[in-house]
Length: 91
Image (tube, rainbow, N blue to C red; front, side):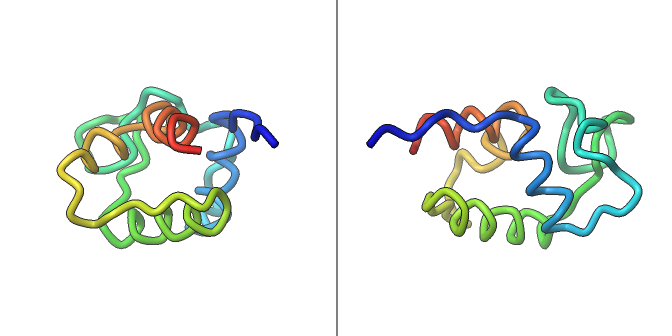
């Protein structure tokens, strides 16, 4: 059985739910905005603990294991768009 691609909005819903982001609606997360750090004024400003929680949710929802020591994590977790692309490529 082939699994359908996830959407950025689907992943945004998971991120908002898992991180309990009460002041942010999933639709407000810009796909290309930085998820982590404070350099992007449109980004979420998440931290490494948030990354662990997101990785756990991805493992539970999509059966994809993200490794903490993967040298590509910065690129994978760069934005909602890059994370969605990674999940769809590895399903």
